[in-house]
Length: 219
Image (cartoon, rainbow, N blue to C red; front, side, top):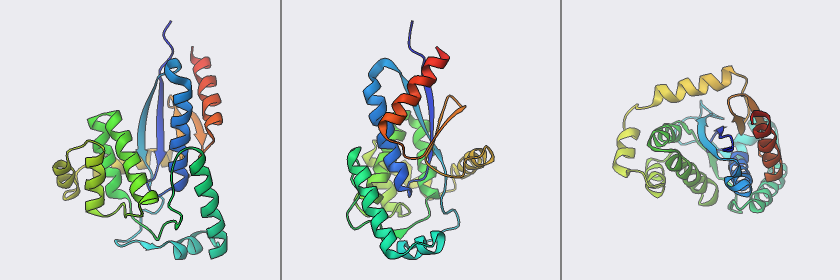
């Protein structure tokens, strides 16, 4: 009998470091499972800072205002995140982020990429994470978004046309509203088969065990 196929919705923001860690962890878990548990991976939009204006905000100022943390606490947290990323094969630049940006246009491109195919959407998500967290580039910058789309094997000209319009804006807002109305207020949120929630950037072992249990329950 064929193994049950898992539908995985990865709700996240491209400006969320724990989302980059969570994706790498999830992919590690899926690699360990091999063909044992086939899965469809879909990326769903969530904006940590939907009101962020053009140009963004200094990261230290932003984190201090939002969470009340000190510069020293932020430095320690950044190093812990860098180590967690390294453990699952994701590289965070040592200097960390300079600014936090609006990510709505990135989500519009990700929605389009999903229509082009799951592999393209995954490739774009990883390219956007790399651009921001590894290379220190802005995920709100038009050229960065187009470069990321091209790196993911998508049509750069078409990406530019989408960015110069309001295309897929309503689709992204509808998806954002859907997940928030269903109780998703922190990311990453990994939803399996529309009913099982795995919250946070968990280690690969946690994802692997959870996916095995879910698959066993539906077999």
